[in-house]
Length: 256
Image (cartoon, rainbow, N blue to C red; front, side, top):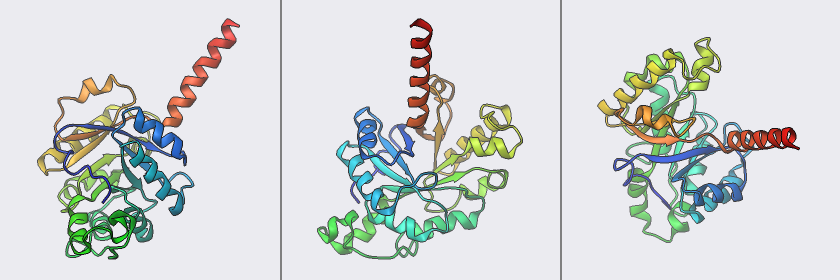
């Protein structure tokens, strides 16, 4: 493992974002801006396995922890290649059942915890440069499994999903959840907020961490006393770039 959040995750709430732009330079910018982790998104953007390797290198160069959002829980190949490349963990989308949560652990951990394909000569182990026997145990200890629960079925099964051994972090996909609840775009709707609070309490009860999305810095004040939150997610760079430039262009047009 190149970089791990394992020893830090229970000490303080870490701040990061999801990156959908397949650009090493943007990853470095975010790291140098102070973000402590970046989730590289293979689900919604065209990041190849080869690109993921260079993106992970860029995160490491900027001293930020790289995770990879894989396309699907059944995509064993993407999970294996992301972790072999040196990702500190994976974010698995669309988890709705205990069986899917267990499958994520199954693919993300070596035996006896799981059934991840074993090869000590991968980048995550300096291509065999470190002790090969110790690598598998170290990887099982440090690799973090993060699950994204996005729909009513997953919410219904959340108490059981939270109890799955090997799962470290749960994130509620508020955008998809709002759509599924018939209130698209209303991610701050009371129905969505109730789910978030429930998830935070369940995470605390089960020794997990909740990854909480903050649309603005002020939102931290609203949830800083909530139990179970271990990670804060900032808006994705596209949102900030688009909104900032749009505001700037509008003002320049008005004033010029």
